[in-house]
Image (cartoon, rainbow, N blue to C red; front, side, top):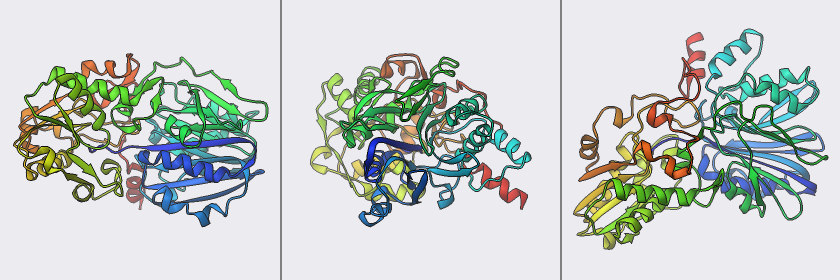
Length: 470
């Protein structure tokens, strides 16, 4: 527990004017786990864009009074953000809106461009002016420039995809169309579904479709662009198959909600399989298996079944505190108010504690401490991911190895650091069993990057450049 995540995107294309802002709000609430820094909604009012974006949770930003200010319409896009690039400011809130010669555009982006720095340098040298430090604005600039000569907005996006690299799942709204696109590797998830009234809904995860009453139609394929307009959906497949599929395996381990289905794979089932693998690879003599809410619970259940050790709810979560690993600051302080141990479950017991990851070790140490204080006599920690050893350039906020505990200590030393009696990680070689194929990215564990590694990295690299220029 401790990695930072990216964003969630949502879009709706209705057959008749409807309260699309309220629909989008519901979808964003279902995607809130993907980002808690900021959120935004843009509604297309017959070519005029009406928007609101701000820092905070969806429930805080989009009150009933705020929603009442949106018109009934047929299209809207929404976004929840955890910034893996760019500071937590209103200027970096999405969806990003662009006004240009060929019309308006609103863009919501999940992921990170691995060649963002080089592209921004080239754009700035050619006269482009940036108003944010997010790489989403880079995509917007390139699409806008291509639109000047392209016959359509989707063709402009298709051309832009020839030069941008890395992770991007996009929902783009023009005055007449809703467009979604996924990078050729398929790093980040994206899917669409149909509501009973014929409305099309696009979202990062299938759980958001269900939240608004839509049924999952299918995932957007890696490299695919899908255009929703008056002529029905149209698929552009120029970039499909141009790169090997490399879906982020950590989506199944941590990021996604357990009730989501990503690329045909149940997130819940993948996590249960991870727990079973941990029981095989790192058995323990114990009395109870406890999962760290929420993403550790499914893996703990799998461990319990495979090891024939009772599963217990030994940690209770305060539902009014967000996910600590996507909290911008104060992570350790949040753990103190987020989790509490149930002494009746763990006191005097040998406990297997299952969590999704260890990054810095501070959060894990605090959780182990909670169980010790509640009377656990032994704590055997099991992690449903391999050790983090390398930076991620595709949307997971691991931009250096400086704070990765696995880069500085051996597994027994990490166990000692966090106060556990033993520690076991999921082996890298068994990750494929979680998703049922080899088409996944595990670069943060293995160092095998699917794209060239950028020379300049870091969430705040564009802020640093501004301060260096003066």
